[in-house]
Image (cartoon, rainbow, N blue to C red; front, side, top):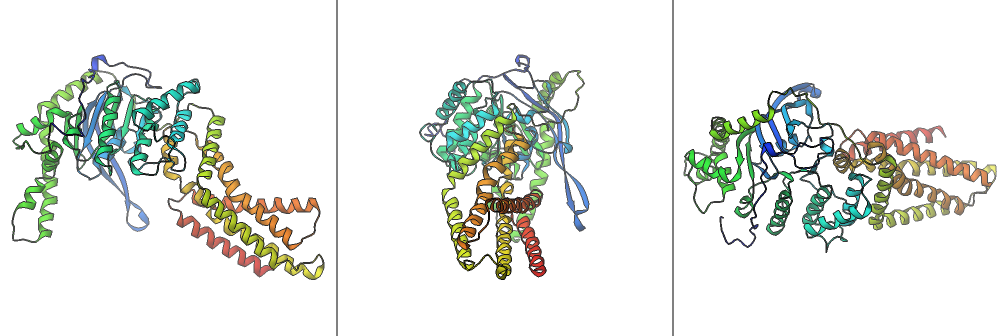
Length: 547
C-alpha cells in the first residue's frame, strides 16, 4: 500500500545523478571511481540437450534485444518469477556462459575488462557464507584476499569496521551467521568491504522480514549516494522501498517491458491507458499488467473449468508480454534511450571481450595461508563431528586390537596376521570413501569465491588438502593403526613399524585420491560415493579370494 506515514519508509535524500558526459572513465583493470554500465542489443541463448543420451542440442532464446543504461544509484530489475530477471542480472555481471551472448555490454563506454567478475561485486541469491566462523572472520577473509596487499592491515580493519557499522552488524560481529537475515547481511558486507564501483545483487530481499528488507535497501541507497552503481533484482517491493529506486527495468519472458527512471514508470503505463488506483502498490500494478490482468481473471465468473481458465491465462500472459515489449520499442522513452546509447557508442569499433578471466591480486602463498587458516577455523567449528569421529576411531581400533590380541610372533599365526592386515586395508578403503565430499560440499562456495577473485584453483586445492584431508582423513588412519598394533602386541623393530605406518598412509592417499578424482566430475555427493564404494568392495573381495 502507498502510505506517506509508513514506519518502515526509507528517508529520501538528494541523490547524485551522473550524466554520461560527466562519467569518469577510469582504468578498467581496477574499475576505480564511478562506473556507468550500458547494454546494447543484448540477446542471450542457452543450449538445451534432449533426446536419447542427450545427443540433441537445441538453441533457446532467453533474452531478446535489451538496451539500456544503468548509472550510479539504485537500479532495480523487476518482473514475474520466470527466471528472466535473474538471468538478465547474471548476464550483466558476466556470470553466465559468454558463448550464448550477443550484443555489447560497456563500462564507461568501453568493453568490460576480461576480469570484470573480479573487479565488481556480486551477491548470489543463495548465501554462500561460511556458517562455522563469525561474521567478522568472514569479512576478514574477503578483505584480505580481495584487497591489494599494499593496503595496510589498519586500513583493512577500518573498512571492515565501517561496513559492520553500516549494516548494523557491529554488535553481532562475533556471532556465527546461522539465520537467513544474518547470512544475507554478511554476504552483502563481504562485497561492500572491497569498495568495487559496481555491485550486483540477485534478489537480496527474498525470504526476509520487512525490517531486514528495509534495512538492506536503506544501506544500498546510502552506498549508491557515494557514487556506486547498485544493480539488483527484486520481487514485488512495498511502496516505501520502490519509492527510492533510481532506475527501473521490467522484464518478462525474456523481453524488455520498460527501462527508465523509476518515478516515470507509473506515468508511462497510465499514458498507455492502464488505470492506476491510488491505494495500489506500484510494484503490484506493474506485475498485474505484465501478467495480463491476473486479478481480473480470478475475479470473473465463468462456466468453464479452472484448468481452462489457467490455460487461457498462460496464453494471455504470453500475448500481453509481446504487446508490452512492442509498445516499449515504439515509445518516446525508448527512442531517448537509444539516442543516449548511440552517443555513448559513437563511431568506435568495439573489440569483443569475453569477461571470463579470473585474476587474483594476492600472492599464491598468501591465498594458501588464509585458506588453511579458514579451513582450520571451520574444523574447530565442527567440534562435535570431530570428537565423534575421534571417539569412533578409538573404540573401533580398541575392539579390533582386543580381537587379535592372541597374536603371537611365530609362523602359526601367519593367517591371523594376514587377517589383521586385511582388516586394516578394509578400514583405510571404506573410511576414504567420504573423501570425495571434501570438494563437492563446498562446490557452490568455491565457484563463487574463485570467480570473484578470492583465490586460484591450485591454492584452494592444496589448502583444502593440507587443512582438512590430513587432520580429518589421514590422522585418524594413523591413530587407528597405532592403537591396533599396540593392543594386539605386534612386536617389530622401529624401522619396520614406520614402514608399516608409511604403507598405511600411502594406501589412505591412494584411496582418497580415487574418491576425489571421481567426485570432481559429479554434481552430487551420492554418485561418486556409491561408485567408489562398489569399486572398493569388488577390490577387497578379490583380495580376500586371493588369500
